[in-house]
Length: 344
Image (cartoon, rainbow, N blue to C red):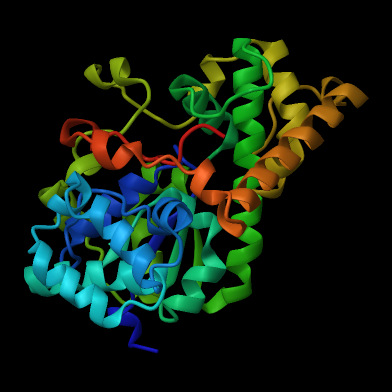
């Protein structure tokens, strides 16, 4: 295990929770390798190509990875990187570590971070293959996350109605955040949770609480001055709001749901919202979910867990994993991209 002040920092969280913002804060703080993309190793590359410790899998992976914009952004030499991977890659964690350490060495900085949100689902594998990894879990109000996910259309509902999109998105938020918390707390010394709302409204104080955990200077003034990515340009699903002087991503849900829509969403995820410290808005008498809605919640959670298991735990991962992103990735889109796994 390496020193904490050299440990790789995994920024995790539900998609649309502010992971990119915090990642860009780390990059802006200095002494982190600047890589403006998500590596997608555990959630895309390994399921699609198999264990990179196996030579034929590794060759197939490199065949698509090296020509991609994801690799191009690193500034690394392809032949040198291939040789380094072939000499020292035994698993997916090794592949990511070799990639990021190569960037770190090239940029002559101390450490690296990674911000693929879906790493939230792979905490155990990351700790097994990168033992000194530490995790910062960004948690955002699920009512705002549901709005943003529905706006992006990333979570496929059982029916196509706009209301179902929001409900499916809210239930996905509940499922993935709960799983991440359960897995992360097994590594309590290496896991911290950060409120997105606190990061936005009290950034200086929130960053200060993380300095001892990360053993890294997170000077807010320096971060603002560097202003990498989302620090200076919001990563939002509602770009029209950015033009105004009152842009605020906190509590957007208060102006976006009807009372009936909010009550239905809170009847499904309200218990978890309260567990996380988010007070509910709807009257208590309106929050009793009927049996049909409870069954719907059960079906969605089963679907999310089943799909993740098929993708990450069986050979069907090759079928369920779409790598079009490696070919279709465009630099202009990346600063606004937090989620790359595809619809669920």
